Image (cartoon, rainbow, N blue to C red; front, side, top):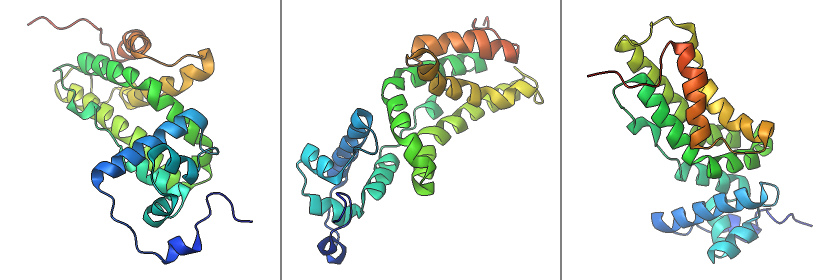
Length: 209
């Protein structure tokens, strides 16, 4: 008996239908919503079709399988929040990053948890998860640190500088497991002020002009 997410033979032999970018975004959003609500194992093509009023055969023609659809949804909804941050100081950048990341923790953290187990068994899914949710923020935080080094705020060879992204993003994933609560903007702001900035020899106060 075929599994609910096996590809129908007719879908394999049919040409891919045309889906507009706007419609694709609607589908991607629904996929991520269902993942947050029920997890990866419970996600089905039937469920996505029902949520979006889209034919199941259309989904199979366009994406082929559940893993392919999830990978497409992760890539298609990738956000670039942090690269826009540039307050002029490293402390200011990190505090603003903490607020931006914390404001999205209520949606990002459930998605990470929903996909973590499945991603460890699927290199393609793991790659998509890292590229969509993790690597852009790591790169942005690393860029903030480099700007701080170039401005002379911290030494170029300061050992703690190598671990700023790991600290900030790591506690985002860890707090729900340790305390049963998301690492929201207020929590991450305190974490930056009390754990990250002291390690860099910085304070949260803005420099005098």
